[in-house]
Image (cartoon, rainbow over all chains, first blue to last red; front, side, top):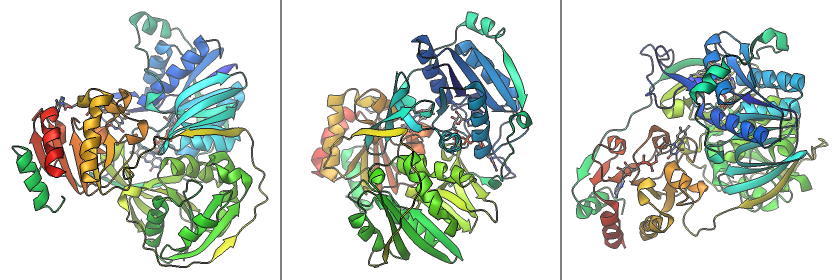
Length: 249
Length: 313
Ligand SMILES: Cc1cc2nc3c(=O)[nH]c(=O)nc-3n(C[C@H](O)[C@H](O)[C@H](O)COP(=O)(O)OP(=O)(O)OC[C@H]3O[C@@H](n4cnc5c(N)ncnc54)[C@H](O)[C@@H]3O)c2cc1C
Ligand SMILES: Cc1cc2nc3c(=O)[nH]c(=O)nc-3n(C[C@H](O)[C@H](O)[C@H](O)COP(=O)(O)OP(=O)(O)OC[C@H]3O[C@@H](n4cnc5c(N)ncnc54)[C@H](O)[C@@H]3O)c2cc1C
């Protein structure tokens, strides 16, 4: 296999406490720590391991979004990606269009694998990988927790509600990765320096022939109904009594 | 009028209860007329179960050898081929539906509304983002088909007692052979299913080993409860992956949830927001789990659990 494309979405860091803006227009992102979507780090790690074991020649990191996403791409290059592409878009773009971007790039680069996260932890949509598979007409193996490449096929273990499902797919294919697939490596300082010299191209959306589709419009955003702290009991007897009180045992 | 198609979820022999929850969601859409489609190698039993669900108009079956296993790339084109008659196509927000429905949406050229919590209008829905820390109201484009997944924990199962007609449909759709099912490794358990259990006992990293996680099973059995776990407990190998509760595991809504040795990370809490009563047992009085617990007990689980199991047996 020649090339692997990996998606790196810039999202609010998973440790940040999310604040809904008081005017209901969305979530506060000003001055908030931004990171690579945690699932996408795992996707990149998997791509790097495949390349390091001789299964691929090149790993290309792709982000679609504002120019700030260059930071996440630089981190991806420091982790070990060979080059990066920023598809420049102002504002939010819908999942189907993002899938269209990956399809255009996969065809242009003749990629053997596109590895994405199982979901982005901001939108939590979990749709881009499956949509890409549909548009590209190639197999999808979603929620992967084990990947083995055997020549022109890949055997993928998937985390499903009933347990662990195994599928075999012909390459090229789309993978979406789950948390237990691997532990992403830490970036070392010299790698950050080296990453500055690696190519990072900026491509306008229009150059890829993707037209943003009719989006699902966000009308308003609100904080969820909170739960209240309840009572504290002193011991097991108190707990059993409280459960009986509520008719739960 | 809204003509709604629901994609049935099943394991080859029985209908999954998530489908009955999709029916309730569909029935909340104004003027809904609901069909369920069952794709299987042999759909007869599953279709009969689907036909019993209240407010279902028709059950359609598409029986093909290739439909024996749930491969999205195989099922999606068949669903897309009959979707033209409908205003909405819905599936459950289970791993089955999450894998399949966006593929269907892309074949139909639309975006998907993921994890529908409430229906606000025929094209307007509420859904969670940021691990449930914000709820957005979204509007799918007027004039396009709506493809969506239904957040199972937000909906009750539809009643039974109906006897909707079952009709067989044949599709000439050409199916890909590039994706092959190899097998499923499923932990066998006699305990209630985590996703539908009325009571759930869950253990975290504090259990310390697979053997000690047995304390969780003992309490669960005393209560007739299902068993859940935090990601840390699954990652450490104390229990199988299908027990994980949270943003990347299962979203559940039992009447009673007992969290033991679980700190209460936001990604875990996402999975239990809709639980009736949350009980937390943790030795750290400052653990965030206590902020959402209805009943909290500060203590060492290795002392508390045997005592509690005994008291409830
Ligand atoms: C709060 C909020 C509100 C939004 N409102 C709207 C709206 O009203 N209308 C609208 O159309 N869109 C909206 N968006 C944008 C949209 O929902 C998503 O951000 C985007 O379309 C992709 O969906 P997702 O991130 O949930 O992707 P998922 O399908 O969950 O992502 C799966 C994987 O796809 C890859 N991927 C996804 N996006 C990118 C990317 N940009 N760059 C690189 N890789 C990527 C990653 O590998 C990721 O792990 C909103 C986003 C947020 C956070
Ligand atoms: C993208 C992403 C997605 C994630 N998705 C999920 C998910 O779906 N589900 C999930 O659970 N996590 C998820 N996580 C992980 C989450 O952030 C936490 O790391 C995890 O939930 C912690 O598990 P825990 O509470 O068991 O462990 P810890 O946080 O280590 O907590 C252990 C607790 O046990 C208590 N304890 C220790 N000893 C005892 C004792 N003897 N008696 C009583 N109490 C004791 C401690 O006080 C502590 O509170 C996700 C993380 C990321 C980044």
